[in-house]
Length: 178
Image 1 (cartoon, one colour):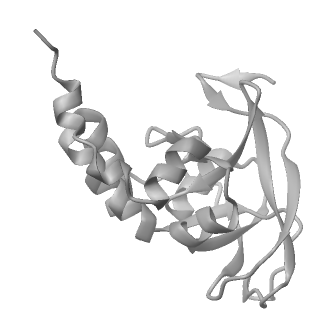
Image 2 (cartoon, helix red, strand yellow):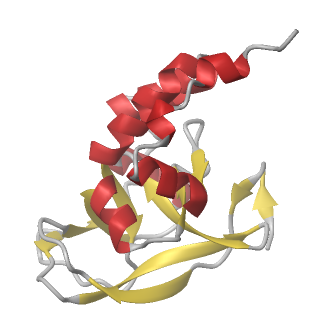
Image 3 (spheres, helix red, strand yellow):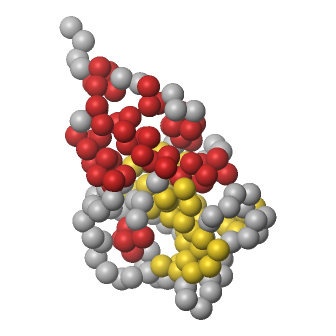
């Protein structure tokens, strides 16, 4: 699979599963506009954590509560471009292959989707905690092809979900030992 600047690219494949959680909504997204600057808390924390390891636990805590958007290519939407999914309604979430692993592209803002897509696509918005719980052992790539991206391998997500990663002293680990 080809890559562009170390970011996932290529044809999407799909996995099927049933929704078990409430308050999920599907929408159609493609703006064709340039992405807006970082505007939400999670994106600011991604950038802050990259510059300062003390910010990493705050990023992970905020991520769990944030709404993420994933591509759902075969999900139909209503005439206004939005609709809620029903409990146990089947749908597909797109994956890409990169470095021998399958990743779910996920976006921290609707505006980030347009940097990734080349044509219109249906998307699903859900709380990250619910999405990670629904897809255990899955890899996610936040904001692929953007200046505000972060790969989240399944092992890292497991540590986020059980909150063990929030207790790690990243600032101490970043200091060189004598």
